[in-house]
Image (cartoon, rainbow, N blue to C red; front, side, top):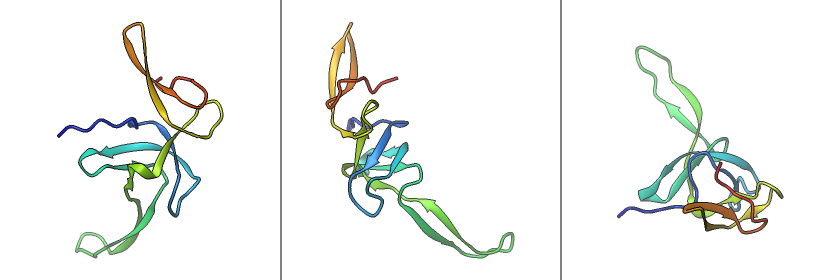
Length: 106
């Protein structure tokens, strides 16, 4: 089953719930079959790497995925969370902010 999300790679989003609530970031990738997104600088977790002969063990900080329902688009004009609607102009489908009516597509 092919899912379509209103959030795309490269969009600026705000976290609306969880430990990083209120933080902004850009979407780096989307996992459609699990409904999860990776957001730059959000949901940082520590990953313990076991030592090998080539390199020593270490503790890395990496970005973990966050559920897509926990993020919302940021309105370009107001900087507040917004929903998204679609409008057809000149035969093209565009994503538009519900709050201000400004276009979200570049």
